[in-house]
Length: 306
Image (cartoon, rainbow, N blue to C red):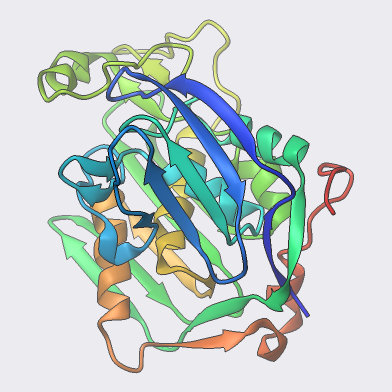
């Protein structure tokens, strides 16, 4: 059996929201089986819980937002990606501001935090969303598909008119170990020429070289350089995993994206959920062995696993 997971104990983290620029404190609490991932704005009086679900996604410009209006939590994708990457299904996320802290712009800080906190198994089987037929969404020249496969595979292509990025493609076969080693450390990125435009939109108020890769017209501005030569497409895969995790289950299917973003990922999730017969929900015990083995946690990397 492959069991649902939560945290071994609660943990608190403080940081800056990359778009709001506001200092926020987030407390992650263990939760019971089938609770899912839910957010609670503690700075708002009697704010209802916000379930991390594809149908609750609001704005998708430069981040993924859960909820709408005042009771919303922005930039949830990196945290959700790390939860999926470590097979964690049930957490209550209390936050005293409008946005999940950006940390270093990747999932590395969250992976470390979850490693040190410990991961606990619950006495209930995981469920998988198994894709049964191919679904495609398109917006202009950008597109994304999801189709049947025995485990989660992401084939991502990005295209940027910049000499460092150009066109990058990576095919990623999911496992917890592969996620930690290949995807979790990849940082978000932006072009220096876009900074003024984004700030006029009220975005990236908290952005800096400490939490993003920044590119001028010719090179990477960050003095430490890149963590991977293709860090840009790896981060796109990190974002895709976070956004697709909003389907609410572990996934057996292949996702292919071309020039995709948060909006396209959410459109893909919604279209899949709204297409009768395109998927089924099954217990882990009915899946092929490789889908289950993908969620084995590397004990050497997560010594506090319980």
